[in-house]
Amino acid sequence: MIEIYNSLSGRKEPLRPLEVGHVRMYVCGMTVYDYCHVGHARSLIVFDIVRRYLRHSGLRLTHVRNITDIDDKIIARAAENGESITALTERFIDAMHEDCEALGVEPPELEPRATEYIAAIITMVQTLISKGHAYVASDGDVLYSVSGFEGYGRLSGKRLADLRAGARVEIDQSKRDPLDFVLWKMAKPGEPCWPSPWGEGRPGWHIECSAMSVALLGTHFDIHGGGMDLKFPHHENEIAQSCAACESAFVNTWMHNGFVNVNAEKMSKSLGNFFTLREVLPRLRPEVMRAFVLASHYRGPINYSEENLRQADASLERLYVALRGVIATDSQSLVPEIIAVRKRFKAVMDDDFNTPEALAVLQSLARDLNVAKAEGDTALAGALAGELVRLSGVLGVLQWEPEAWLKNRPLLGLSVAELEAKDVAPARVDAAAIDALIAARTAARVARNFAESDRIRDELAALKVVLEDGPAGTQWRWA
RNA sequence: GGCGUCGUGGCGGAGUGGUUACGCAGCGGACUGCAAAUCCGUGUACGCCAGUUCGAUUCUGGCCGACGCCUCCA
Image (cartoon, rainbow, N blue to C red; front, side, top):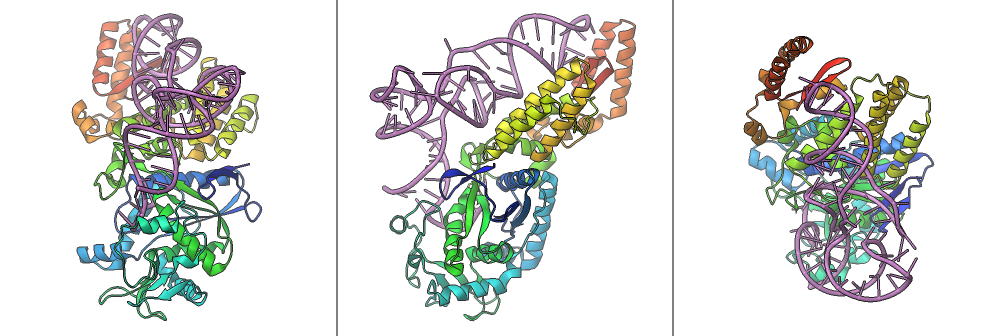
């Protein structure tokens, strides 16, 4: 039984799909006016794991991840760049898809865009007006009336009075309540717009997710996810809209992932402490980013640093080294070791996706594999290796050929600064040259000329090549 | 000001009312021509102060500290 922490109740609750064996999940995606940064990557990876694990558990999944392709920031950025809205959004949608692919994030079943659901949005706004939950303000905008919705603030643990007291927004005279939020925004001259019963305009931010989730998953579905910062006001408002419009239960389980911090502060645009995936990914392999993200529980914060990435890389390398030289068998031969490890893996992942524990399970599997290798038990080693790859696949790691992983380290390091410090230019070194040096060293060793063999090893070490002598000959990998 | 999260050994990071997380780094041993990798062993960690308890890092209260949300944000 899978248990998930529900932000709404503050407790772990068993996942009981509304339709037996079929989970419907909606995750808030990107507003496409800029490149994805590491914070987005965490959210993408976290829900990719949820996705992979639910399917691994034999559940059918309908996963929706929306794209916000119309909003104030998009309009502002397009104007700034002197390009059209669609040119801008298409460009960043493509970029996002490239980033996802690089990270090994599986595409969701459905990826709706706000601009494709204008009709559904208008219908929902009309419903809200007719039910008395929304009104047309003096400036023409359609606003949601917060006071008419009992339970507003339940998700974020806020009370209307507290929100009003702490309101930092300047009071807008057109609003009946300062906390009322916009459903339909009237267009200013030159702004993109769609016709509506209230005039030319565009949807507010929150309404698109209500309209699209209802349209694609129904009024009541299983999981709704997103970053912690979406909890209020975005998800709070979604609940208010959907529940009021549909007069139905809305979402059973709310999931929120924690932030990526830099020096203990939230990575964000305003602080200027963000790194885009495009600048970061060429310097490390995407699996390292995944390993880094999965090393912490999804609800807590993680600190983005070179050292933490280095540690993630080292932990992955240990797994790849274990896999090396073993022919993984697609083991349906359920030896006790494999039954036990599957059970452990399931237990920790069932427990609110405890990926740090899952990674620990993989590490202990690697230890068993190393032992089996050392004892020459190739059958067991092959079976364990097969299982290691299989379980790792649920986390989206260890999907490379071990040799390729160990010999293709991009740029040999994690950062430009580090590379400069090491004064290494890996492109200069090619595999044939390395093999030639290794052959020369082997010849020296056979001749018991250890001074020469050590000299060659030092020469290779200077190139950041590490040698490992074994029964099957000498292997190498990048340091 | 309101609401909330968190504080674990050198680092990262799970977890538990009394028994091994796991990884990185370190140390000792085995292995090796020497290494590397691997395996074995090792470190008496749970912010502070009280309380509950036979016993608390794990429960309760307070304090201190860090962070987040309350405004667009994954």
